[in-house]
Image 1 (cartoon, rainbow, N blue to C red):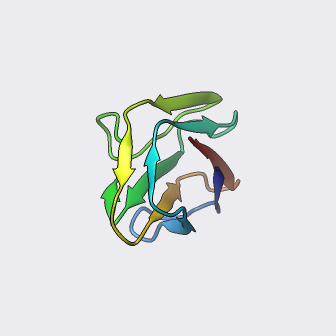
Image 2 (image 1 turned 90 degrees about the vertical axis):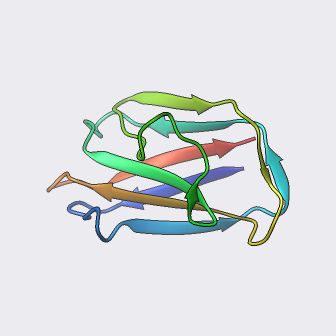
Length: 104
Protein backbone atom coordinates (compact mmCIF):
# COMPACT_ATOMS: atom_id res chain seq x y z
CA UNK A 1 0.00 0.00 0.00
CA UNK A 2 1.31 3.42 -0.94
CA UNK A 3 0.45 6.54 1.08
CA UNK A 4 1.43 10.15 0.60
CA UNK A 5 1.16 13.47 2.39
CA UNK A 6 1.54 16.86 0.71
CA UNK A 7 2.43 19.60 3.19
CA UNK A 8 1.98 23.23 2.13
CA UNK A 9 4.67 25.85 2.81
CA UNK A 10 4.48 27.49 6.25
CA UNK A 11 2.49 24.68 7.88
CA UNK A 12 2.95 25.09 11.62
CA UNK A 13 3.76 22.28 14.04
CA UNK A 14 0.80 23.40 16.13
CA UNK A 15 -1.57 22.91 13.14
CA UNK A 16 -0.12 20.04 11.08
CA UNK A 17 -1.47 18.76 7.79
CA UNK A 18 -3.03 15.32 8.33
CA UNK A 19 -4.34 12.55 6.11
CA UNK A 20 -6.00 9.33 7.30
CA UNK A 21 -5.82 6.01 5.52
CA UNK A 22 -8.02 3.04 6.39
CA UNK A 23 -6.03 -0.15 6.00
CA UNK A 24 -8.04 -2.80 7.85
CA UNK A 25 -6.83 -5.28 10.43
CA UNK A 26 -3.24 -6.03 9.53
CA UNK A 27 0.30 -6.82 10.55
CA UNK A 28 2.61 -4.21 9.13
CA UNK A 29 5.89 -5.97 8.42
CA UNK A 30 7.86 -3.02 7.12
CA UNK A 31 7.40 0.63 6.36
CA UNK A 32 9.54 2.77 4.05
CA UNK A 33 9.41 6.57 3.95
CA UNK A 34 10.73 8.26 0.81
CA UNK A 35 11.87 11.85 1.37
CA UNK A 36 12.53 13.47 -2.03
CA UNK A 37 15.42 15.83 -2.61
CA UNK A 38 14.52 19.43 -1.78
CA UNK A 39 13.04 18.90 1.68
CA UNK A 40 16.29 20.23 3.19
CA UNK A 41 15.26 18.93 6.64
CA UNK A 42 12.50 21.58 6.76
CA UNK A 43 9.58 19.15 6.66
CA UNK A 44 8.59 16.76 9.43
CA UNK A 45 6.42 13.62 9.27
CA UNK A 46 4.80 11.62 12.03
CA UNK A 47 3.07 8.28 11.35
CA UNK A 48 0.29 7.55 13.83
CA UNK A 49 -2.26 4.92 14.69
CA UNK A 50 -4.88 5.64 17.36
CA UNK A 51 -3.10 8.93 18.03
CA UNK A 52 0.19 7.22 18.94
CA UNK A 53 3.37 6.99 16.87
CA UNK A 54 3.35 3.82 14.79
CA UNK A 55 7.13 3.66 14.39
CA UNK A 56 9.87 5.81 15.82
CA UNK A 57 13.61 6.16 15.39
CA UNK A 58 14.05 8.10 18.61
CA UNK A 59 12.63 11.37 17.34
CA UNK A 60 8.97 12.27 17.19
CA UNK A 61 9.16 13.32 13.55
CA UNK A 62 10.86 11.86 10.50
CA UNK A 63 12.84 14.39 8.48
CA UNK A 64 15.52 14.33 5.80
CA UNK A 65 16.48 15.27 2.28
CA UNK A 66 16.74 12.91 -0.68
CA UNK A 67 16.77 9.76 1.43
CA UNK A 68 14.68 6.86 2.65
CA UNK A 69 13.88 5.84 6.21
CA UNK A 70 13.12 2.17 6.79
CA UNK A 71 11.28 0.55 9.70
CA UNK A 72 11.46 -3.26 9.89
CA UNK A 73 9.80 -3.93 13.24
CA UNK A 74 6.42 -5.67 12.82
CA UNK A 75 3.40 -3.82 14.20
CA UNK A 76 -0.04 -5.39 14.59
CA UNK A 77 -3.11 -3.23 14.08
CA UNK A 78 -5.44 -5.37 16.14
CA UNK A 79 -8.22 -3.01 17.13
CA UNK A 80 -10.39 -0.39 15.50
CA UNK A 81 -9.97 2.02 14.00
CA UNK A 82 -7.68 0.26 11.54
CA UNK A 83 -6.12 3.47 10.29
CA UNK A 84 -2.78 5.11 9.72
CA UNK A 85 -2.59 8.87 9.97
CA UNK A 86 0.20 10.82 8.30
CA UNK A 87 0.77 14.12 10.07
CA UNK A 88 3.34 16.72 9.11
CA UNK A 89 4.52 20.29 9.22
CA UNK A 90 6.74 22.37 6.97
CA UNK A 91 9.14 25.17 7.91
CA UNK A 92 9.81 26.03 4.25
CA UNK A 93 8.32 29.47 3.57
CA UNK A 94 8.22 29.00 -0.21
CA UNK A 95 7.62 25.40 -1.28
CA UNK A 96 5.24 22.61 -0.41
CA UNK A 97 6.76 19.15 0.00
CA UNK A 98 5.47 15.57 -0.04
CA UNK A 99 6.39 12.41 1.81
CA UNK A 100 5.75 9.00 0.25
CA UNK A 101 5.19 5.99 2.50
CA UNK A 102 5.17 2.34 1.43
CA UNK A 103 3.48 -0.06 3.86
CA UNK A 104 4.09 -3.82 3.57
